[in-house]
Length: 473
Image 1: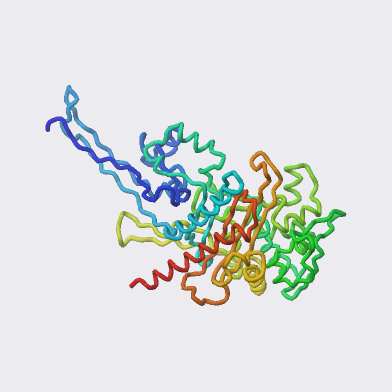
Image 2: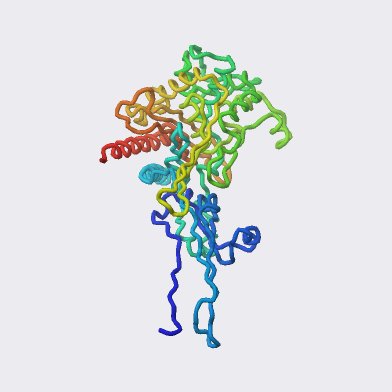
């Protein structure tokens, strides 16, 4: 019909809705400030660009170039034809390292625990799961709850809806796995152990005696087992997470040496994951405390730092990377969420992203006894009730005690677990080795009872998914 024409309009659709929303991110219309910076790259007003997640981090790869069409109209506005037409150039495609089946299982495992805690505590909390291959750096699952539906942003979210997301006390827009910044608790003892071994303060054959408390500068620092662990070796010390031994090691190491090792394991700095906005966390020093609080550093600060409390903070991703260094005997691979890039929409023009690696400054011989302590935690230690021992899991729990605050009026504990599988043997394990780190905010429980079972479900899912892939012809 004269005067009518059809036009194809593209719309961004996220078929899995909330699943992996913090990874993918969302898009929005380019604003004037951004347009001024990107106009030289061919961006035009009204275009949609990445605002968060991979949509933002890989904007240069995904965007392509907008087309141009100049139309001729008659005096009454009827279309007569095209005067000039420049076709659009599509952007390249990227393929994530995420296994969607594992992502879904990890999300469900964490969601179930958060629902249980909400019913128990009378308030909702959040959490994160990171699953990473220690020998490649590829992230196979990355969950942050609560989440959001990126489809709400696809055609422009209303100010009312966006304000509701921003004002939500559970912070659904916050990627807790990458942007979250929390005391790592006793999971940090993996680093304290490595530092003490490498500095010659202890050996794999050392024995210790825990009376239930340790005096630092005249003040008692209590173990979480108030009656004490008695005589224990290094494996038992790590597996039972004896605080007294680590208070002592923290004081003997001092924050200068301990902070150097923490940085070497990737804490206090960005991991380099291909997502924007990553937190650096915080590894304190005496100079840092003086600058921030105008206070001196005390031996008690050394003791608290050694058990991952005080001023020490890290993201779940950082703790997963640090754990990977233990698994690989000291090699750290940069974590990646994008594994492949396809140029010019060609099935044959594929580029694989390979992570760079580096070596931590700890003798490789010391990692075996750390792994033995993690295995003991699953057998007889703080994670024995999680069910992970039979699967070949080794891990370390963490429980962070909190004082009441405005955001946490009941002072509920944070819970951690970080571990890997398989330990020392293959058994029924057919999958690639996997590190899983779980963080549960304001749980009111303990790492072994709250976070570790979530990780075990992720390990079980990974083993089954890989077995099914092997069985499929």
